[in-house]
Length: 311
Image (tube, rainbow, N blue to C red; front, side, top):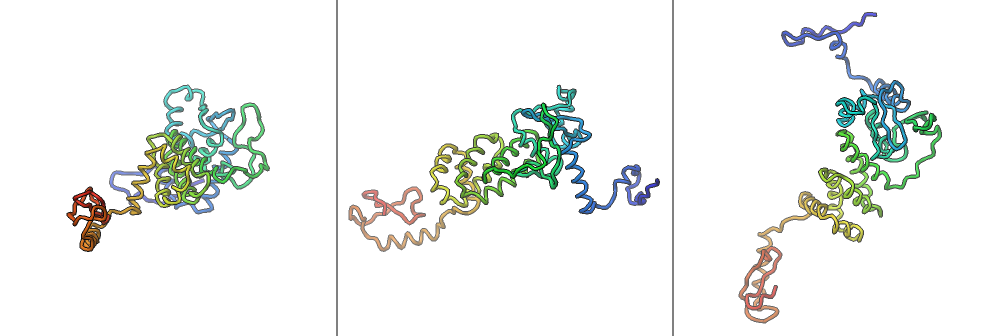
């Protein structure tokens, strides 16, 4: 069957030409229905593992995946398969430092550009028969009628933290950004949660020190709710344990203009008025010979030169 393609050769710069494949690739943007159909295909590839040419092993679970999808989006997987390591021969990568649920969320993103932070770790619409096969079973890992998740309300935050750490480790930058966005949304909505201090502690103890994105999210929210946050003894304890977080909060307070430098002109005018109405020191009763110390005048304070008492 002949495929008719538009003649676009006249629009090219002199000396350039398009191959047949190049011309065929220049088509209108797919419609929403086409994109939905493509997502269905990708979901089926993920959940059923058909035509897979690579395996990811994690704590007794085998994920059947596709190099063209996984390795093109992860610098870690690309290096493991393409740089002559043992994995390049066996076409299998062992991830023992992560949980199967975290690996499912990673793969969900690589295939579907999203992941569920609660309940099912893979985004899908209809019950499916497979996602991964346990090493000692041939049955489905996900039952046809899996019960609803019993994860606690704050589990979503922990899940996003684990995905963020894994995305950083495996060099999946867009997933890292998505996990940070989901985490930020949770923190902004749940900063008054009784479990908030546990979320902060997990970030401070688990996220690699070179990465401060999640810390900055926490610092931003805490700076906007600083009075409420410091009423929680658990939060106060964490701030005492992690000075770097306290520094970030101070920086956020200033950048968000929640803490401002005193207006010198207004402060000085008030100070002059106060001095004019105070003729003697409240402590030694001597007539004032005023002196200032360490910018105290910004806060309407001055000292008696005789006894050094603040007035």
